[in-house]
Image (cartoon, rainbow, N blue to C red; front, top):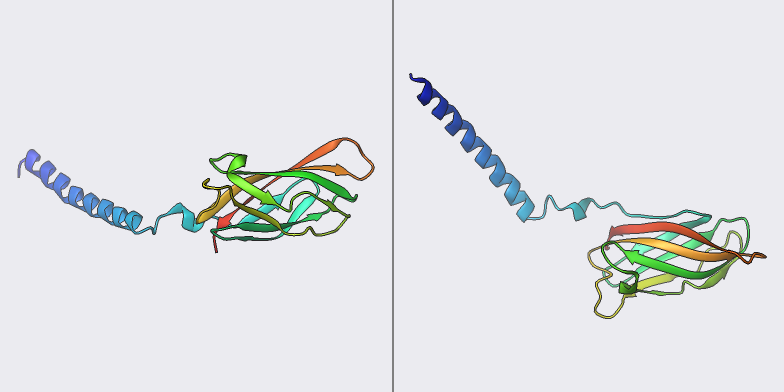
Length: 152
């Protein structure tokens, strides 16, 4: 057997094997088995003295509750939600301006689409920014966090 023939047989044998593997990976990707959205962790985290105690993500709204763990009463003056790859104006936030006593759980904070914007979908990932005043203080503080997950 000549060297050229041996090399060609080697390349053809492994070439077909590689082609079959690539076709299998392509089929898995086409049918959504390898979609990264399926593996998105569901979480709601806030730093800076607040915690996210409950949350639910659907295709039409995100609802979550904050708890004040500052050790002081707090007046939340604004809450901004910026979705991943979008702008804060893409989402409408309702129920975010409130007074929370120390240890108190907030009322429901609802996030919905703003008109035709695409804030919500089958998955949701956004950054939170909470601006608040501690009781008896005049300087504002900022707590940050994130919320993400797959719609139920």
